[in-house]
Amino acid sequence: MDTLIGTRSFPAEATHLHRVRSLIREQADQAALSSHVTGDLLIAVSEACANSALHTDCDELTVRWSLGKDRAEVAVEDDGVFEPTIPMPELNADGRGGRGIPLMMALMDEVTIRQGTDAAPGTTVRLVKYQG
Amino acid sequence: MLLAIHRDDPVVRLEGELDASNAQYLEGVLEPEARRGGVVTVDLDGLEFLDASGVGVIVRTARRLKGRGRLVLCRPAGPVRRVLDVVQADRQESLEVVEHSPQEVLRDLFAALARCDLHALEELVSDDAVWHLPGNHAFSGDHAGKDGILALAARMQEHTAELLLDVDEVVAANAHVAVVGNMWGDREGKILFGAGEVVVFRVEGAKVVEGWTYVFDTTELDRFWS
Image (cartoon, rainbow over all chains, first blue to last red; front, side):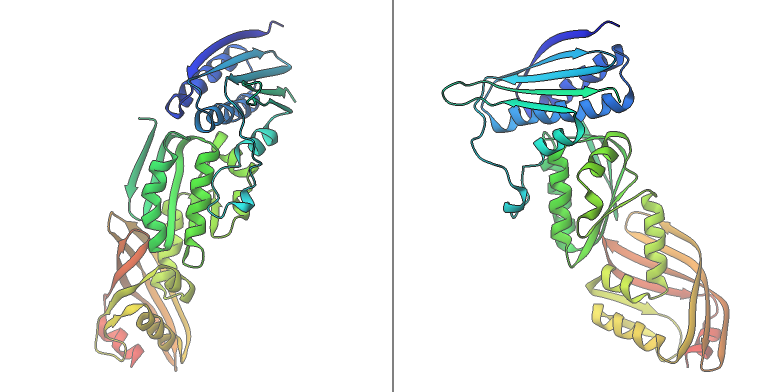
């Protein structure tokens, strides 16, 4: 079975998140992924892109996908610096933030974050989902 | 437009996709509702996507309502249902996720209110509400304020063995909700056999500000309540 591979860049802005989701829907459809895998991937990828859009000052983010029947992987990259703080929702009285990464972890089989630092900028969030 | 917010008081209906680009816009709509209190009902039937920012708005709205009402989310489906399940939204205080339509939620809520259920009164009636009762009996006239209405309901239930409202229909329009039904009662040996009545509520947001009870046979009600 072929694996569908591709790369596309988007402005790192919240108003472009729906375009990333349209791309994922379209590619997942072409790769004939199940609706369960597609749905979970959609949420996790949107969340990873929202992190770039909201928490970095990057202009652009890049989405790379490799969608196969048994294994779907999407990576979201930007050239930003990862926030060097630990988001703890229970410490934020107003409940702002801190749910994106746990959400990705709950939905995906693998989540790896290569965090950009001041010394080595560039953050990559790699999301993997297996066909159960 | 990515997200459309329809206001059909007392229901807020969402259509489209809720994400970091428009979560603040929704929060701006829900915040005054939450400050006023009551049962804030949001229909998610037309919502196709929800992310962590949207969850943030839901959680903060529920927190604002704590002790003064609750947030009821109706009919989540697909990825929206998935996200609400994963974040265990139904375990949040003053937040409820239900499978039925807002019309059904309203029906149950307003039917309980029309039969003067104390919990429903406590939750829905605004502090400065007025309730008008017809006829020439001990409870006829205008009852002002939430405390006044709660006291009225308590007094009506005193010496009353049984008081039931058999609801035929609940009709919700923009600012008014009407409950049509028949009242059955047993009070100090007097029996009420399905007396027809209509209770009309005027709502502002998720709160009831005025209520009118109309009975088809006022002399029958006068006999029962005197």
